[in-house]
Amino acid sequence: MFHFSNLVRSKGDPKIISTGPSSLTSADRLARGLGWFSIALGTLELLAPHRVTNALGMEGREGLVRAYGLRELFAGVMTLSVEKRAGLMSRVAGDGLDMVTLASELRPSNPRAGTVLAAMVMVGGITALDYMCAQDLKAQHDPRRGRKRLYTDRSGFPKGITAAKGVAALPRPTRSTATT
Amino acid sequence: MKALVWHGKEDIRCDTVSDPEIEHARDAIIRVTSCAICGSDLHLFHNYIPAMMPGDIMGHETMGEVVEVGSGVNGKLKKGDRIVVPFTIICGECEQCKRGNFSVCETTNRNKHLAEKVFGHTTAGLFGYTHLTGGYPGGQAEYLRVPYADATHIKVPDGMTDEQALFLSDIFPTGWQGAAQCDIEPDDTVAVWGCGPVGQMAIRSAILLGAKQVVAIDRIPERLAMAEAGGAITINFDKESVVERLNELTDNKGPEKCIDCVGFESHISMAQPDSVLDRAKQMFMLENDRPHALREIIYVCRPGGIVSIPGVYSGFSDMVPMGALMNKGLTIRTGQTHVNRWTDDLKQRIADGQIDPSFVITHTVPLSQGPEMYRAFRDKQDSCVKVVLKP
Image (cartoon, rainbow over all chains, first blue to last red):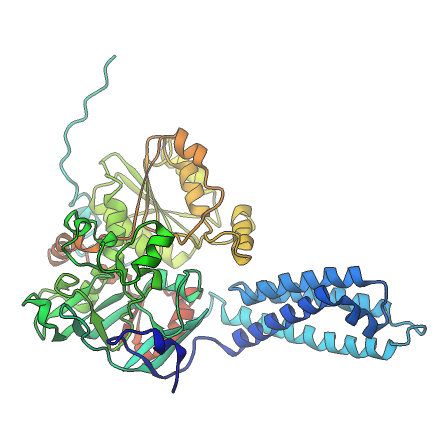
């Protein structure tokens, strides 16, 4: 199997022949996907807000869409970081804002009301995905998982602490008291 | 052979890779009998250390049996020898090695041009770490090529188990150096931030070196219990103020000697707003490090005291209180560990029964379980403090 990384190894270094199971869980991978989705959506909203407002019949609200784009980018960066659960929860909060904004556009006078409704269904689905992923991550990274043990008998000193205390201390010269 | 390979952030895999080969006359190959996951491996796991590449083999706490030696090893090692491999690769011949400053060996970093650009000068080559330190394949594998093997080894005496000897590779001399460079005196209070494996070793080292009292600071109950078992007074920073408690223990004067075994991934807590700000800046690449522990140390350390930093820092740290540091006349001592400076002495202390570093091992698993143990160690699940892997 070809691996780019093998190209930079020296002659004696091991090179990958085949890859094994990863430490990444399915929730980690889903979070990563949602993070990149946030980055893509945020970039679109920031750079081409007219496309969004035209599609949803929201002309004149480009400034708001740009602000939402910025929010998506922040949430995306957070979701791609080690603190992905915080990123996902910020996405859930952002999804809520999106829903409120979309709901305000769901009026009979909006010729794109059907698209707005479809967008609301999509945002609802993604919100559920964000939330479920955040909950999965919380469970997977919970420090309470596994056995609880206290290591009260692990002093590391085979002869006991009293015998160990100061055994490596160096003899020091007596300090002279400063005089004026 | 099987090896734990870095493929990206939080992505460690147990891959099949080709066996290492002798590349230079001073190389040796060992069959790894035991290796461990280090706290600093988690910095790589989180992709906070720059210049990692997919395909890098992890691991810098390794020991095993010599199976092949190059022609330039000159009888210093022979097949069948049991050795611990120090995480710093040393030539033993340069000016720094001759001074005992092994972690800044001038010879062994094969990417020294990168290190010189980033650090100003080169540092030693390290196993299983960033390409800034040579990008040498690490020892979480079935076999390891040891460059400069005639100098880069610690022979294991007969009768010493793998579990007793393994930590001579890193955490024991690291904790020891952290304490030793504090110049501990009999009336000193030594405070140790972080009760991970290096913190545990620093606590025991401070006890052996004769501190009046040792105070351990963390928030994980099992780690605090282990610290207490080693003779420390403990402070759970989730439950009480570190500064207030330390002042209470020292007649409001602060500890004379402070050891930072936390490094640049300080815990994030809403009760410590600086840690939250650090994390936000780190996320947007506006700061490399989260130095909350270091700030607290500088604030609470007794004027004229010594701050020892064995914890790893990666790049730039913001809002380090230089005013307090300067006006209190604190001395800072730090550095990657000069492993071979200490190991003859420490090996003897193990042999004499003064200390048994195996106390810190909480999990021993096959190498193939490495990827899941990275997660368990990171998330502190199953009361995990130290993982030993058996290839």
